[in-house]
Length: 51
Image 1 (cartoon, helix red, strand yellow):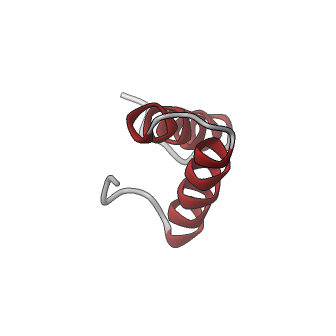
Image 2: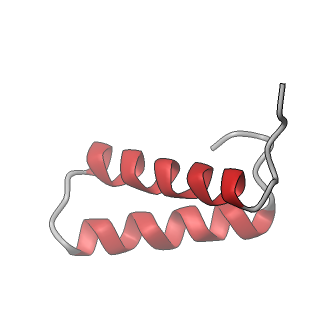
């Protein structure tokens, strides 16, 4: 997980990853989905740097 993520976003990532694993996704795919979801949420909430 990136250093830029807050504790809240790390918890969100873990929760989404576990949910995806419970749905039968592979470890790699669950991580991809969780990371993409957290990054989209961060962007939507203005938590990312705009260069």
